[in-house]
Image (tube, rainbow, N blue to C red; front, top):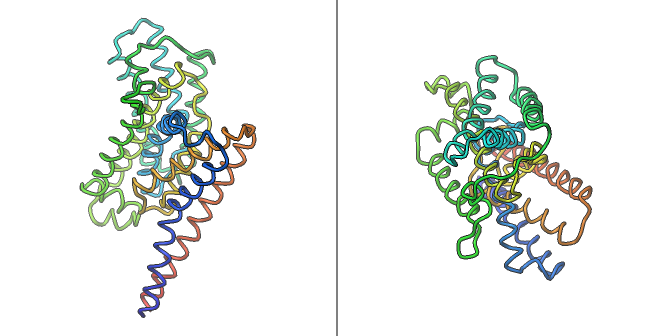
Length: 328
């Protein structure tokens, strides 16, 4: 029996350390492959570019913990910021009101995703969010005439463009968000309910958890994080673009799964997600440093997603086998 427990422990440790080890190996490789990799400017650029996907991935994390998925995150990000841009063009210049417009759109769209799941009882959020993904993208193009919007107040661009002592303000905000969500997931009743729903939805209902209300929060929160990521995006590029973040959903999903979360639900950590985000950011940065074509970048990230999903399948099988052996 001791050998079984040892084997189980070794495999669990291996799966947990694999993302971090991959991050270290990739960093070492890029250090030797490009003389520009370890330069301060490049390091700060990686963190700045990672900030947008980091915030979206944080929302995606709690969605996936509940055994759900949100394929509309890129569209929510785009729709949130272009709606703010339309408000700006209509004469709204107060930065606080503009930000509230952006956040309100993100939350509202996320809640709609939750309502489609909880009220219409669609079989899986994959179905509803792929539909709202197209709706959101269409709306973003429609209300802007497919043209980017520029001229935002400097205070709105500051979170994505500013630095404190050479360190990106955007990544400082990411660190604050990650700490707060870590506390929420691990030290609150709501956090325990989120894990419970993903682990066993039927048991959560029997335990008296209001599953529908929690899921509404989860998808609303995902929309909220998309809107915050959109504000960071505006600071980076200086414009609200209706086709912003075309790979946001896939990058976020890959980061969360690489970080140890599972499509079967009930597991996932903030720290693991951060490792996944940094790994995706390093891959993109490394390909850019080596002047790889954008087409190749799509291929590489696609392979990373497949590998991450395969690792999730293997990890789930290993855990199921360990549970069966423990019961035997």
